[in-house]
Length: 446
Image 1 (cartoon, rainbow, N blue to C red):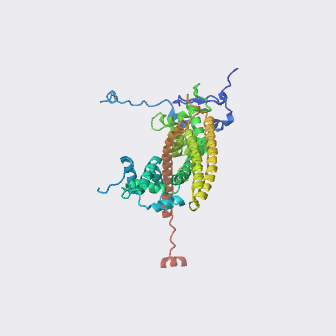
Image 2: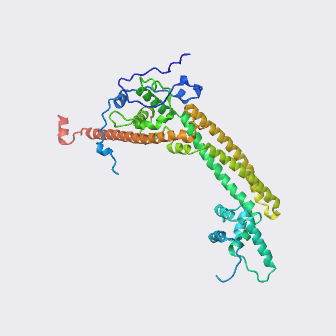
Image 3: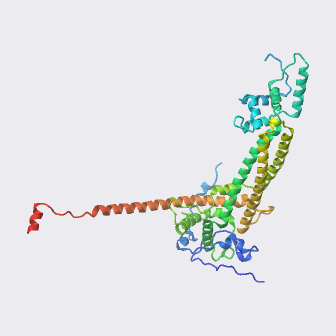
């Protein structure tokens, strides 16, 4: 069976051009449905190549090489009972000295879920330094034996502090639930922000008008430069790894790059607001692309699994507090935590659906650009895909800002010249003065 011919006619530039070393994509040879590809939607705009030929033909000035020599590199009295080891006692002591609180403030905060006086950071420190079961057993044993003695030695301050904390009803379970509620909200919000960035970037790259125009120009100029080449010409698309390299293709006189030319051409022919403050950047922002490149779907899935596991643990702890608490200490913990658990379950399910949809959207985007995973990878990663776009968008934006500034200055210069000419015209068009006086009157009589 004969291969189908390329969809595009061959190009023969008037002069030999500098090549653009891309890996072309021709749609007739693709197994995927053409309608799912970005390249199917991109059209090469009609371009006047006269200036382009002058700039990027092979009739380049010989690069002045450095001299060979430049290329070679030159070469206290009262006794107390200490039940904790020294390191542990010191850690609890430091925590105690950092807290400017009464134990009743801590108890109020925990029983009433009120962090106005005792903040979450302090609760975290109290939770991490709480007495372990073995320590509590030693402290309780000493206190029981002390009651039977007349002059028993008192506990050291760190031991007393840990004992007082343990007397707060269900201290461990309550603080665990309070801290989890805070961390759950923060984690869900963080994942949501990241997925929002990922979705926004994917949508823009898939169908953004500015992106389509820019890729169309790259395709047009690239096909022109590769005209007559059997392996690079007549391309319907190209591998994205060429994007960061476009800035390295220089004009014949080495004064500008292919990227700067494409940016200028885009602004002059596709952006009505070029050189104005209302000019909108056509590609995803470099910062968004960088953040997207740092994301890993496996990390998102691990976060969701961890949250689900901790949510189950929190549910168990809430049930334990509700079962063991006396009536006076049951509220507001019971109602607030049960409301939180119900809401958290719904939020987690919504987040998981959003994560799966975003993952699917990303994979569809990579397919639409005909990007394949590297050998050894199950699927292409956001890091691999978005890093190319981030580098390209960063370079493109630098040129875009520079070109916009130049065009704005040119607009201002034209406006100033028009104002100057209008002012000069107003100065010279002086109305003739009507004659008056005795001579004029005598002349009128005659």
